[in-house]
Image: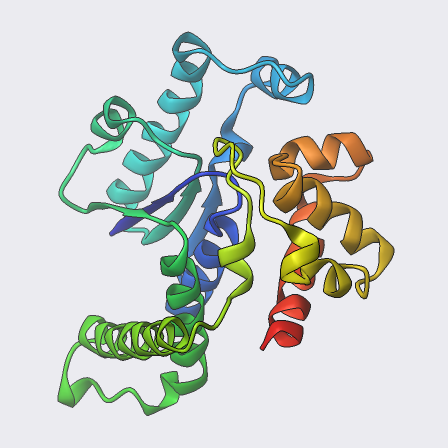
Length: 235
């Protein structure tokens, strides 16, 4: 099987994908590593890629998928947001599965994989397949998450995600009124600046990394740590 996790920047593709691959003892691939040098240079300069730019990249991904399937290798691929035409191009066999990561799904998957990792020793093949074992844990985690969210909404609770700014949304939250600013200022300086750029000023993670002149991976790691700290504060 070849699983392709796709979604927008910051949806957790790399985090979830690598954890899933490690849990299942599968191979993990990051689609960004397959871009030709010309594409990498364009992205470094902030120039959007065209469909023509992406064709060599898609061809390399398709070849990687075909090679893995031919060799019997199970793998997970973390990929950027894919258009329908791109997905059709990469769907070369029924063994290719697409998973769209977004919002709450990321939290559910991460929580699920952590539980799978911690409880994998309890798996008994005589009681069912590994897929069923994983499915049951994921389903129960999703139910718990839904109930938790419903409880918070019923009691007018706020989550940090509810305060995030959509770059395409003209609405700007009244930060001083909500009181989130005092929590942000409690973060380490390198975490504060990233949160301000990405969640309050509408920058993408890649844009923020370039503005701060730090590697994208470093930016993602710092944002993940910062969000974890903010969640603890808000809860």
